[in-house]
Structures are given as C-alpha cells and as structure tokens.
Amino acid sequence: MIISLVNVKGGVGKTTTAVNMGAGFAGSGLRVLLVDLDPQSSASYSVGVASDEVGLSSEDLLLGEQAARDVIVETGVEGLELIPGSMKLVGADLALARKKHPERRLIEALKPLRRQYDFILVDCPPGLSILTVNGLVASDFYILPVVPHDLDMEAMNHFFVGLETLGLTVRGLPDLLGILLTMVDHRTSVTNDVVEAIRRALGREVFQTEIPINVRLAEAPGYGSSIYDYQGWSAGARAYSQLGGEVIRRLRKKGAI
Ligand SMILES: Nc1ncnc2c1ncn2[C@@H]1O[C@H](COP(=O)(O)OP(=O)(O)OP(=O)(O)O)[C@@H](O)[C@H]1O
Ligand SMILES: [Mg+2]
Image 1 (cartoon, rainbow, N blue to C red):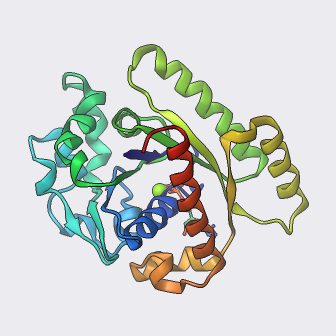
Image 2 (tube, rainbow, N blue to C red):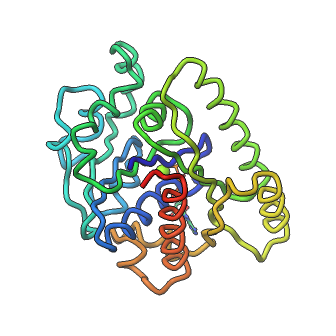
C-alpha cells in the first residue's frame, strides 16, 4: 500500500503525519518505508537522518539508475526505514523534464519494493510540482492534511482544482483516502466554525480523527524521535494512534487491504 501526503500549502502537517503515522504502523509490527521527496528533507531530519550526509537520496532514484533497495537507510525510529530527501531535489524538476515519462520515475523505482513493505508513505513537498506528481502517481491513495483556517481551505480548493487539471494530462492519479484536520485548536471560535464548515461540505471525505495542536509534536523532530518515542502519552501521540486505526479501517472498507 503506497500513500502520499500532499497539499499545495506548506506547513500543514504533511511531514508530521507521514513520520508519526509511519512510526505508529512500524510500532505495531508492520513493515514501513518512508520516502522523503522534499528538498527541505524534514522527514529525514525528523527520524534522525542528516540527509545530505548519507549519500544516496530520493533524487538518485528519480534521476539516476540507482536501485531503490540501495537507497534505503535505517532510522532512529525502530522498524521504520527511509529513502532520504536531499537538497539536490531542488534542481530535479528541470532534470526530470528531460526524461521520458518524468512523472513515472518513482512508481517504476518503487515497484521492486512493494512486496517488501506493508506501507510505503511518501512525504511530498508543498505544491503540485513534478516531485509531488511523482509521489501521487506512485500512490494507491493520498491523504490531504488541512489546517482549519480560512486561507488553508482556500488552498485546499486550489489543490482540488489543480488535481483535476493534472488529471487531464497525467494518468494514474490516486484516490483520496481522506482529508485530515491538523493543528486543530478548539479554543478558537474561528477553528470551530471552519471545522464545522469543512465537515458539513465534505462529510465522509474528512477523517473523524483530528490532530490537535500539540507542542510535543513540534518538539519531537528535534530529537529525531517519533511522538511515540518522545512522549507516548501526549495528546499528539493518542491522536496519531487513532488516525492509524482509522486509516486501516478505511482501507479495509475500500477493499484495498
Ligand atoms: N499538531 C501539531 N501541533 C503543533 N505543531 C505541529 C503540529 N503538526 C505539525 N506541527 C509543526 O508545524 C510545522 C509544520 O508541520 P510539518 O512540517 O509537518 O508541515 P508540512 O506540511 O510538512 O510543511 P512543508 O510544506 O514545509 O513540508 C512543523 O514545525 C511541525 O513540527
Ligand atoms: Mg513537509
């Protein structure tokens, strides 16, 4: 099962979700691979991997002839393996444009690995660049994390319009597994209003689980730890456990697992 975390908007919790959902699955004994497609490499950093010191990265997969298994590294999170990101991804757009089927580089590279993992989670950079498109095309489903603020809802709408336009030229785009409300702060009335509006408009597309704003989730990456290793009893850890359960239930319901 390959799932990507995407949004045109930055800072909405894509990386935090990829890392902690991945760590949660790994903690329950599933085989999990995290793929970092972001030049910022926050996912790699969050699991204790200084990406540009490890040598090979997702850039080598996309542009080189490197086999995916040679790019995988262990992380500080038990059971979670990683294909690191790299600053080199900054120039990948232009280089990819010269390749045949530039949007299919990741799906082709991951093919030999599919049977080795229960979950491959792809952390995409913000936007709908060729990097994100590679993540999408490689995936069975995508999750769209959204912060319930007005501007973020605007970005969500841009995303759906962008995806529709993309679908005219790119085949093999995945289905939405769910919209995930992140950094939810129910103390503010604007949040409550927007959460209600999103749930009313999008119904079951929205995960029941909400990720609350929780400072522990923001602190954990600095220790190269998942939220479970950092503060397993925090509200953030509980929310991500709940999300993991809901993701599995949704996949079962769709007959995907
Ligand atoms: N629920 C939360 N509560 C508090 N802080 C959070 C929460 N989720 C994420 N953060 C923090 O907010 C910032 C943005 O989150 P994150 O990096 O996961 O977003 P992103 O969508 O991956 O961003 P980018 O688009 O830059 O890759 C990070 O500093 C992260 O630690
Ligand atoms: Mg990120």
